[in-house]
Length: 350
Image (cartoon, rainbow, N blue to C red; front, side, top):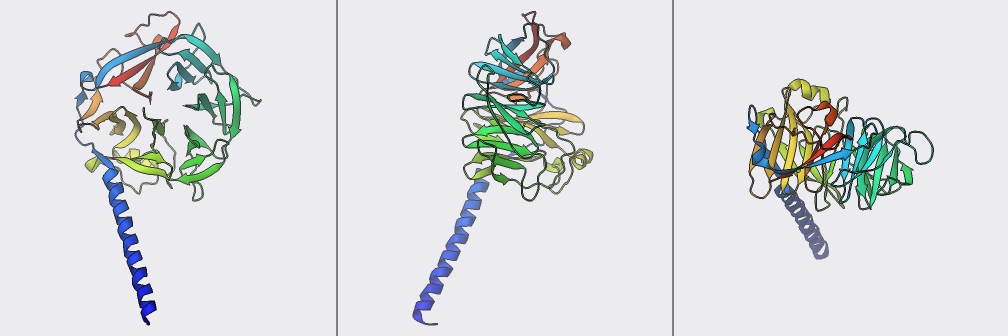
């Protein structure tokens, strides 16, 4: 080896070592940024409402005599409340009064119509509605006037608007199209992430995406112990839940196997203000974990069931957790409005 080749070899070796060190440092940085929440001391424990809830806003939805089915999902903007019910109707109410604005039920295969309304999300001053059967997204303005639509080419359970398009939860993950799919604004696939070989014979979480008050989007795949933050480079692990000896095995292939194992698994996830809240299922019971990111305080267990307003959040707004009741079926709580068929409760955290 002559001197020139020697220096080239030394340079290449140095670059290789630096690259390895860079990868190691990047891995260490990712692990450092990943917050692990240990959830082990929750069985037979009650979470007092005053320990975690500062106030509750009530939104009595004035349906003006129109029938409202069981609520499937809710979106709240600065001025409006949108409700999708299981009777395939989409509702708009004023926020926070709950006054009726409009109800649509445009079922069909024509322009601006849908077959099976499944999920909603807000973005770019529009309300987006997912039609499960036709694999379509329909866009509406603030008062539910139809604007446009597009189709996507795979079965999806949930979605959310991001800056350059949409994220979808793909129901049939394959080697070519993974569990989380990123499309542009026309539904064209840009990339997919988080490979999964797990069969989704049962799904406990209806919502797989949340947006915090700063606009950051987080991803919660079904039966996952990790929560991902969406970035320009794709999903990055942000939070991990550790149930100790009750943690489900990583190599499980079926959701049925998890439930039969009686291990703990997450069924919902929220980020509100500086709190991480997840509800999880273990041995036939539903529990909650509240983690305060400011001081590390935790509350684990199940909520006090003696309270008049039930704590069972299903969704989140920019500043609170959202639960609901159908008022005709709930004797303990009576609305002030005669035409209120449902009420939303926004729980603000301490």
